[in-house]
Image (cartoon, rainbow, N blue to C red; front, side, top):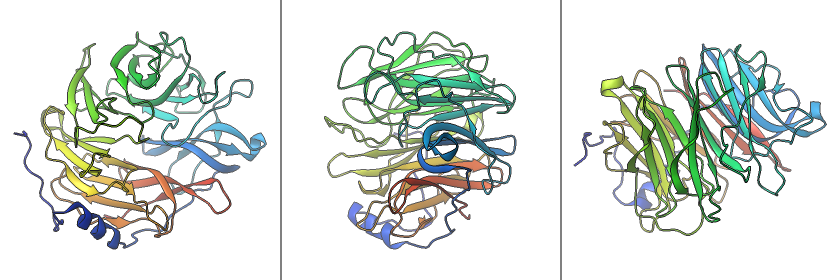
Amino acid sequence: MPLVPALHFSFSWFALPLLAAGWLVSAHQVLAGAIHPAVEGLSDVHGMDIVVGNGELYALLVGKFAQLGGGMAVAYLVSRDGGQRWSRPLFLNRGDEAPPMSRRGNDARLALAGSRLLAVWQARGELPGAGPMRIAVSGDGGKTWREGANPAAGDASRNQSYMAVAADAGGRFHLAWLDDREENGNSQGLHHASSRNGGSHWTAETTVDPEVCTCCWNRLLALPDQSLALLYRDSEPHDMRLSRLPSGGTAWRDQGPVGISGWHFSGCPHCGGGLAATGRAGKAVLHGLTWTGKDNTAGLYYSRSGDYGRHWSSPFFLGDSRHKESDIAARASGEVAIVYTHATSLGSPLYWLHSRDQGRHWSKPSALTAPDAKADHPRVIATDKGFRAFWTESREGGGKSWTMAVPSL
């Protein structure tokens, strides 16, 4: 039996998945107009990450910039007004090094610890579609940057991707990534290292799981009890799985599957999950967002855990297999927000729903875009002024724009 209470909802959900999915589609009340933040010279976005701290929003964008003749670059920006206006881009990759190789899902990542920042992205390597991690670090709040160390010392192939980063309360940075050092071909290993000095030096890498899915994003989260949680997609079965590193520990503990389990699949769904936490160390609640392609239960699900992932509530169905790309975030007050796309014949509009009581009750889903918008890979960020949703959106004639919205509670 799960250790957390059953979920309750402030509205009625249909029992059958197909009916539930149909209800979600019809609940189209646009809460806020999409905003396209002005970024000097940006013409096409290939990757993004957003973090919050010190009353500011920090962004890492990978895209094409006019300042570089339309070339690809990794740009760092800051917003001091909740995302309405952004600073001029500061380019982190040098012109004499391999250009960044980024696509949505395999995004560049950013982490913040006080005045220290860590940025990581995949650079183009010798083989097509492959390349090593590049790391940039700042010790002065992003004013100046320098090159950091790559901790993947055991990967002779120099091909690391699908990175996840986090900063804990002690100021340590944590980095997880995929590589195929065992040359399995149809799977990769998931590895982790940490740094106490802002990313200049790293601990010896450890393997969290030697065989995981090759192309699904991972989520790394520092928890209230100073432990670390890592949500990823396993290889066989293709379930979302949680591993946890206790505070002060060196060995990762397998906490088992999150959401629907038992999906046997030979390919890659290109879809990871979302992870957030609310509460204090002794009363923390984990919030998991997972997608599965398993027959008869395919779709997007939410689950909550009151014991750091050892037991989870029954998965709560959010939408069928077309509700694939999603994210989750939480505020200290106990508010939780979910964003997801819904693929239709018109496009892939973006929806959001929220809870005020740590996931026990949920609002009705509402749309953040028009029905024909082609949104993808959304992120939701918890700030002291509420939530912010960010995503990329395909434009007429090609390319993607960086887009955001301020959902109303």
